[in-house]
Image 1 (cartoon, rainbow, N blue to C red):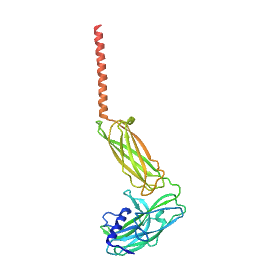
Image 2: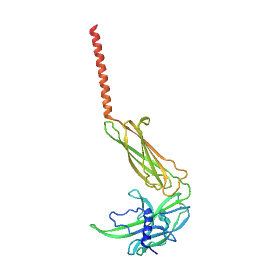
Image 3: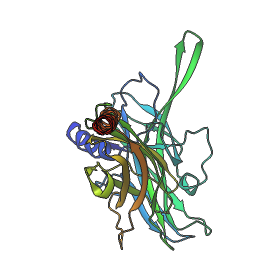
Length: 328
């Protein structure tokens, strides 16, 4: 157990906040007053996550630090859990009520019930043992420190599990396949029937169908026939996707002319997440769609104008024929 001076506590807190797991919490909770951080023989060493490269059947031992920032003792339950995609699209961890089958099941902690004295840190050793049949690629989970509290509501007593965690990333050696795919591409046009430029709403599903965690950087191209009126939009980096994760991405491309048949092309370039390397760079994910955007009012004016010209010419021709008949 280590007691934290105020300055040291603030420094450690800064490290924790940079790599804290966004564990789902009920709305209206009080501020978190404890932290979880990678530690070691000499205490926290600047790591923001536990990151390992292991072979099937391999193992590694490490230390997690549980920190109490309050002036009173704090009793917590410490456990490992698999990573899941949260309701907000971010990194989350399975609740204690659900059974882990991946990294959360591979990690074994030396202690599960920990009491941390005021303004102190307790280091808990743990071991990660990889099954021999573990699949190659990235596996994610975390170590959670939780406090269960009881609260009263109009309907009775509610048990609330407040959690903070540190991430675990384990890359299992073997054949690595970084790959993203764009599916279910949808496009629609919002604009004036007068034929003025409008906006194209683009929506698609991005899936990590490889075995490495990846971040995608999207770009969208909209153009008319023969590339006329081309508009390009470069997007911001998207959220990290673990293997098997999917997200729906929506964006708007402004100032698009109504040029009849429009082509919409979405390209998402895979990029490394965190400090990992991607060599060689994986191919971009590409999808395209077509849609008709007709400027109805200008088209109607053209049609009416053309009809008027045809009518006038026919009338003029009949008049000429009639005059010729009268002369003869």
